[in-house]
Length: 163
Image (cartoon, rainbow, N blue to C red; front, top):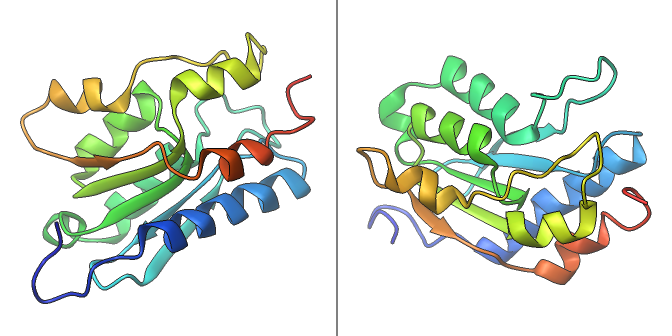
Protein backbone atom coordinates (compact mmCIF):
# COMPACT_ATOMS: atom_id res chain seq x y z
CA UNK A 1 0.00 0.00 0.00
CA UNK A 2 2.74 2.48 0.85
CA UNK A 3 6.36 2.83 -0.04
CA UNK A 4 8.52 1.02 2.52
CA UNK A 5 10.54 4.22 3.00
CA UNK A 6 7.44 5.99 4.38
CA UNK A 7 5.13 5.30 7.30
CA UNK A 8 1.56 4.36 6.38
CA UNK A 9 -0.69 7.36 5.83
CA UNK A 10 -3.47 8.01 8.33
CA UNK A 11 -6.32 8.04 5.82
CA UNK A 12 -9.02 9.03 8.32
CA UNK A 13 -7.01 11.95 9.72
CA UNK A 14 -6.15 13.26 6.26
CA UNK A 15 -9.70 12.83 4.95
CA UNK A 16 -11.00 14.72 7.98
CA UNK A 17 -8.64 17.54 7.02
CA UNK A 18 -10.22 17.63 3.54
CA UNK A 19 -13.71 17.63 5.08
CA UNK A 20 -12.68 20.49 7.41
CA UNK A 21 -11.50 22.43 4.36
CA UNK A 22 -14.88 21.77 2.69
CA UNK A 23 -16.57 23.30 5.74
CA UNK A 24 -14.29 26.34 5.37
CA UNK A 25 -15.28 26.62 1.71
CA UNK A 26 -18.94 26.63 2.76
CA UNK A 27 -18.25 29.25 5.46
CA UNK A 28 -16.65 31.50 2.84
CA UNK A 29 -19.75 31.29 0.63
CA UNK A 30 -18.58 28.64 -1.80
CA UNK A 31 -19.79 25.13 -2.50
CA UNK A 32 -18.79 22.75 0.31
CA UNK A 33 -16.07 20.79 -1.45
CA UNK A 34 -12.32 20.67 -0.89
CA UNK A 35 -9.32 18.52 -1.70
CA UNK A 36 -5.79 18.24 -0.39
CA UNK A 37 -2.60 16.96 -1.99
CA UNK A 38 -0.53 14.81 0.32
CA UNK A 39 3.09 13.81 -0.23
CA UNK A 40 4.39 10.29 0.27
CA UNK A 41 5.47 11.18 3.83
CA UNK A 42 1.99 12.39 4.82
CA UNK A 43 2.76 16.11 4.55
CA UNK A 44 -0.11 18.25 3.24
CA UNK A 45 1.42 19.98 0.23
CA UNK A 46 -1.62 21.92 -1.07
CA UNK A 47 -5.22 22.56 -0.15
CA UNK A 48 -7.92 23.66 -2.55
CA UNK A 49 -11.50 24.78 -1.98
CA UNK A 50 -14.16 24.60 -4.64
CA UNK A 51 -13.64 27.48 -7.08
CA UNK A 52 -17.17 27.94 -8.42
CA UNK A 53 -17.32 31.43 -6.90
CA UNK A 54 -16.84 34.27 -7.67
CA UNK A 55 -17.08 33.75 -11.45
CA UNK A 56 -19.51 30.80 -11.51
CA UNK A 57 -16.85 28.48 -12.97
CA UNK A 58 -18.67 25.17 -13.44
CA UNK A 59 -15.27 23.48 -13.95
CA UNK A 60 -13.87 24.97 -10.73
CA UNK A 61 -14.15 21.73 -8.80
CA UNK A 62 -11.61 21.54 -5.98
CA UNK A 63 -10.07 18.33 -7.31
CA UNK A 64 -9.62 19.64 -10.86
CA UNK A 65 -8.10 22.93 -9.71
CA UNK A 66 -5.82 21.09 -7.27
CA UNK A 67 -4.62 18.78 -10.05
CA UNK A 68 -3.83 21.75 -12.29
CA UNK A 69 -1.80 23.32 -9.50
CA UNK A 70 -0.08 20.02 -8.65
CA UNK A 71 0.83 19.13 -12.24
CA UNK A 72 2.38 22.54 -12.81
CA UNK A 73 4.12 22.62 -9.43
CA UNK A 74 5.66 19.16 -9.06
CA UNK A 75 7.50 16.64 -11.20
CA UNK A 76 5.56 13.59 -12.47
CA UNK A 77 7.86 11.14 -10.66
CA UNK A 78 7.05 12.81 -7.33
CA UNK A 79 3.31 13.03 -8.05
CA UNK A 80 3.27 9.30 -8.78
CA UNK A 81 3.86 8.82 -5.03
CA UNK A 82 1.28 11.40 -3.87
CA UNK A 83 -2.33 11.08 -2.76
CA UNK A 84 -5.39 13.29 -2.99
CA UNK A 85 -7.92 13.38 -0.17
CA UNK A 86 -11.25 14.86 -1.11
CA UNK A 87 -14.53 15.45 0.66
CA UNK A 88 -16.48 13.84 -2.21
CA UNK A 89 -15.61 11.36 -4.93
CA UNK A 90 -14.01 12.98 -7.96
CA UNK A 91 -16.49 13.37 -10.83
CA UNK A 92 -15.53 12.17 -14.31
CA UNK A 93 -13.85 15.52 -15.12
CA UNK A 94 -11.87 15.50 -11.88
CA UNK A 95 -10.99 11.82 -12.19
CA UNK A 96 -9.60 12.59 -15.64
CA UNK A 97 -7.48 15.36 -14.11
CA UNK A 98 -6.22 12.95 -11.43
CA UNK A 99 -5.38 10.39 -14.12
CA UNK A 100 -3.45 12.87 -16.26
CA UNK A 101 -1.63 14.25 -13.22
CA UNK A 102 -0.54 10.70 -12.39
CA UNK A 103 -1.33 10.43 -8.69
CA UNK A 104 -0.86 7.19 -6.81
CA UNK A 105 -4.04 7.31 -4.76
CA UNK A 106 -7.42 8.98 -4.19
CA UNK A 107 -9.24 8.84 -0.85
CA UNK A 108 -12.74 10.31 -0.71
CA UNK A 109 -15.68 10.87 1.63
CA UNK A 110 -19.05 10.88 -0.16
CA UNK A 111 -19.51 8.78 -3.29
CA UNK A 112 -20.95 10.44 -6.39
CA UNK A 113 -24.16 8.41 -5.88
CA UNK A 114 -24.42 9.61 -2.25
CA UNK A 115 -23.75 13.19 -3.32
CA UNK A 116 -26.46 12.95 -5.97
CA UNK A 117 -29.04 12.05 -3.30
CA UNK A 118 -28.00 15.19 -1.39
CA UNK A 119 -27.81 17.69 -4.27
CA UNK A 120 -30.61 16.36 -6.46
CA UNK A 121 -30.62 18.12 -9.81
CA UNK A 122 -29.40 21.44 -8.44
CA UNK A 123 -28.41 23.73 -11.35
CA UNK A 124 -25.08 24.54 -9.70
CA UNK A 125 -24.23 20.85 -9.17
CA UNK A 126 -25.99 18.47 -11.57
CA UNK A 127 -24.02 15.53 -10.17
CA UNK A 128 -22.50 13.22 -12.77
CA UNK A 129 -22.85 9.79 -11.14
CA UNK A 130 -19.93 8.01 -12.81
CA UNK A 131 -17.63 6.36 -10.28
CA UNK A 132 -13.99 7.44 -10.46
CA UNK A 133 -13.00 3.77 -10.38
CA UNK A 134 -14.76 3.37 -13.75
CA UNK A 135 -12.89 6.34 -15.20
CA UNK A 136 -9.54 5.08 -13.88
CA UNK A 137 -10.22 1.54 -15.15
CA UNK A 138 -10.33 2.93 -18.71
CA UNK A 139 -6.77 4.21 -18.37
CA UNK A 140 -3.34 2.67 -18.65
CA UNK A 141 -2.08 3.41 -15.15
CA UNK A 142 -3.37 2.07 -11.88
CA UNK A 143 -4.71 4.51 -9.31
CA UNK A 144 -5.60 3.20 -5.87
CA UNK A 145 -9.04 4.34 -4.71
CA UNK A 146 -10.20 4.29 -1.10
CA UNK A 147 -13.75 5.34 -0.32
CA UNK A 148 -16.39 6.13 0.48
CA UNK A 149 -15.18 6.88 4.01
CA UNK A 150 -16.46 9.05 6.88
CA UNK A 151 -19.69 9.47 4.94
CA UNK A 152 -21.71 11.06 7.75
CA UNK A 153 -19.01 13.67 8.38
CA UNK A 154 -18.65 14.39 4.68
CA UNK A 155 -22.43 14.71 4.25
CA UNK A 156 -22.80 17.06 7.22
CA UNK A 157 -21.02 19.94 5.44
CA UNK A 158 -23.74 19.91 2.76
CA UNK A 159 -26.61 20.55 5.18
CA UNK A 160 -28.68 23.52 4.05
CA UNK A 161 -26.73 24.13 0.83
CA UNK A 162 -28.74 22.39 -1.90
CA UNK A 163 -32.30 23.06 -0.64
